[in-house]
Length: 483
Ligand SMILES: C[S@@+](CC[C@H](N)C(=O)[O-])C[C@H]1O[C@@H](n2cnc3c(N)ncnc32)[C@H](O)[C@@H]1O
Image (tube, rainbow, N blue to C red; front, side):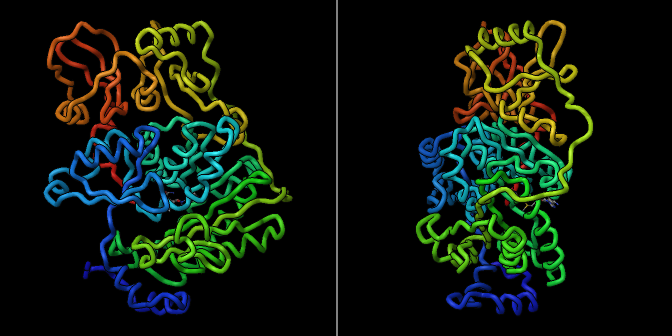
């Protein structure tokens, strides 16, 4: 029990006023003080669930499936192992095969699972309106099998950088990052998206188990202020949703002010155009956390997790909106000339036996980018902070490949691949060259893999592989972020 967890009296008084009658306050307080179980989600873009189970067994990790998420596991590691190698420095994490993600935080994308895995992925666009650090963005991308278009928006500049780094590590190629107050989407991208996730900024009352100070500045006044922001975000999200599309609203807080009341606002604002999709059958036992309206109100003591709230809505029909806006300024990318494109494609074929990259190659000055093909529908609507994957830099003699080409598309390669040993991987992530056991005659670029997943690019030299890891990723092990 963590005796340092701060739970203010006035918060407890408030909880008493809305705690469902079948739950009791003492359990709630006890669970708030109990440390959280470590959970991870397997990134199926890089590793299958079966391969993870095998690897975890080899590592001596005790894993327990998260009942609501086929890719989620609670993990117990020995104390010595945890001290010697924090999970963020393990090969599974560095290779992007796993994301450390709280089990209840896997629920919002799960509420879109059926829609995402059953749709024709080349023809849909999804918005993640408040995305950083990206646990749910990467979960959505994996459900979309890295296809279609996923716009991931984040308002905070520093968090946007972490989001971008996490997307690179996870090998995500179908994403466009934007950097706006989410309130603009309804005006600039009116009825553009098939599905929207709004994992809203909130007061974080459900997060005390991982952050003992989460309730330090708690007040009803701040709940009310945040609820105002949430209302304008949910309104914007509903406007940006196509008729027939689905919206998932979630928070990691407990107060009805930021949850049920925000949903009530949406229902009142758009009346018959909104339909609540009940979540009581989302997984076995979901009914234990379902409210009378059909939302999931996950109290920490129900599933021994963080507190969370999830609601799902369908947009039945188009709604009127008189404040549509158009972006000023041009799209700063142009086509990659056919001849250069042919040379680039034949290099990839010769060096890696990669026939074709999925997407559209576009150029901006000397940079070569691969955009999701679906992007063309929305590319002029807003300015993007980052689009698709930077695959290379154009030089007079051709294209120098970028690290991200390897992390996002390295799995397509059939030759010039080198599997890193643990020691080589440790060297590689510290920015050192990779020493080879025997001299090699191979030349040119090589894809480096760890846990069978591509992690970067190097260049063959006689006795080593020259390290091409970008400088900003050298301390990547420290990027571990809980959500
Ligand atoms: C709950 S966190 C998102 C967590 C993220 N979905 C994940 O699973 O990794 C909410 C995010 O919203 C961002 N945010 C705050 N105000 C915003 C706004 N007006 N528009 C968009 N994002 C905002 C915060 O910076 C924060 O990163």
